[in-house]
Image (tube, rainbow, N blue to C red; front, side, top):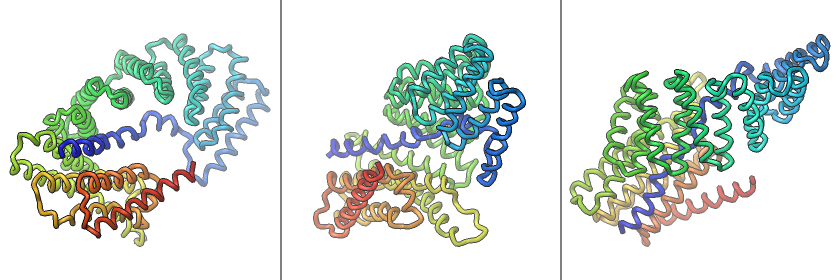
Length: 455
């Protein structure tokens, strides 16, 4: 029985990394932003202005003048931000050719343009071309600016990200670490840029299952944020939470739980109690509490086990309540004219958190029935969990989310709930539960078929 529980729990425990691994990198987002952002209605006019500037440069300075290269680069940046990458790529190449003719192939202006072309390739996942561009830009920047310059470190960091995407993680980790070292030696060790790179490196190390190495960087991040922002800061709390998840993966449960409880106190202090960040910490605490129960089955008596399972159930219940509240508000606000409706980002986050909480709650419920010998006539809790999960697919205001934004998380949640019921406890005579299992299986099949069609 214990072996079966731990097999299922192992999959549950590693869900904690899904949000971490999918977090967008602020530094790269900043690269994709820049000064050319326009509202949709301004895009056509902006394009005309950039094209006019290019025409004026050609007429005023000649077709191969550096001013033309500058105008080409500006128009290329505009197209890149519009995700019209093929147009941008051709313009970057033309600009580079002019700059090479004017200043030579090793000029810093050439390096800057090659760097921009590398980003264009990077965004298209043309990784070999992006690597070539970043390596060339790095060589030019190192010669002109010096290998201790922050811009040199920035290009090195982007090259690390490309190498990681190519599966060259060891080289990527070395470059990312060197990029951080350069910033630290330049006095920028506590800058947002450096912290962002340390977060990236810790995520890469976790992907490589180098949890102990990741812990070193996560503790460093937490130390920097404690000194610069104090503990009553959301940034510090989130950094501590990421460290706690890594500690949980290494079975350092006591410190992990202590950090999460401290994070929860900070979040409740600086945020509304029904904030999604609070819900996220609650579900993490619920999972760690369950983890402690499963790790200490041989030593704990039934009263202690019952206490911790009840605690875990309450934590996951609170998380479910907050997440469902956000989703229900978004449904009600659809019919209000002047409402401050929940954003799509919040809806996606609420759905992802709800799926984690339902998964944890279902596991807690089945574990309690197996360990504490609770009456087998009462399966309402596990039925409710399955029904809530299925309703996310059936309700119009959440259906599009589980079919697209959180599709993989949703399918994983359904599969794990099915495993909980079928492998841990078959409930052979529970007709209502069996009907829910059939419906869950049908949903998984529909989503899988849709994924196949879209390939």
